Length: 328
Ligand code: ATP
Ligand code: MG
Image (cartoon, rainbow, N blue to C red; front, side, top):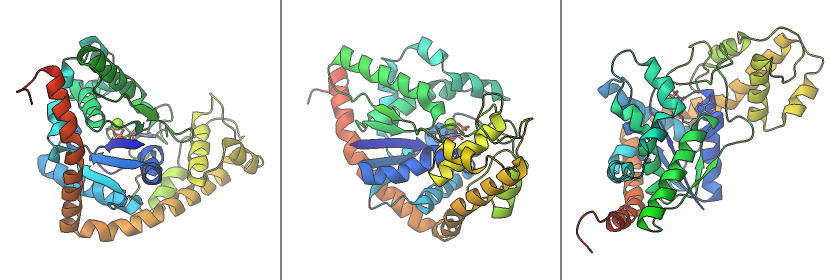
């Protein structure tokens, strides 16, 4: 089983990323051949600072290692180091429908949030994402719920490529966790917790100080009523139940049963304690790992080398199938 996923180096990663994606990445190392990529090229699709991007790529690498990725058991690399991603993006454009790209929710959301340029890169983001995965013939893609539409498009692209040019690419499956696939913003529980679009108070960062995390959770927007139960008209409480169930690895029913007689305040306090305890070890390990930037660079370079040995032959097959370049 080959697993592939990418994560953006934009900003500090948040609790949604941690629960929805990073936890699955760590588990993936025991389930198969796991390949993880820090997608710096994706991060250039919205306004960004060049010097900052390089730093954030190291920050993200250090965070992933602190969370439990082990370069000896997975391939961890920086997207731009493996040129095959960019080349395959262009080649896949020939089997990507403009109309499909135009329907992507993420493009509409992010384009609407740009103050200046809406880059063509933002529009092509899902094609680059398809190239990331398809270059490795990955079978499974662990992601949060917000990536459902992009994975569907990636599957269409792979299927159309194979139909047009012959069986070449693997059509991957998404792996979206049952609990924790869509953690909502604590201040705006109708919107997903997000790196680029969320509220500051409503976004718990993995590296936030414990007291700050506790404060954000204690001041989460909750709903009228007093019962700790999940319901469509209780998005705030439902979100906190989901967070606690994810962190504890238990069911929604377990949480509801335990807090059946509790008030919102006590429940929030319990969620705050569970989340701070869950993230504390990651934050502690992070400081040491991030301090050794040369070590991080070496780990990423080694990862890129390993990644290239998988992606290069796939690209050779794609070029051959498409009639691009000389015959072998
Ligand atoms: P942006 O809002 O700028 O797109 P992001 O917060 O979505 O950033 P990414 O690096 O794009 O961060 O996402 C990394 C992974 O985290 C993806 O698999 C994504 O599906 C997952 N993820 C993002 N937000 C959440 C969330 N609120 N709950 C669960 N998973 C999430
Ligand atoms: Mg995202």
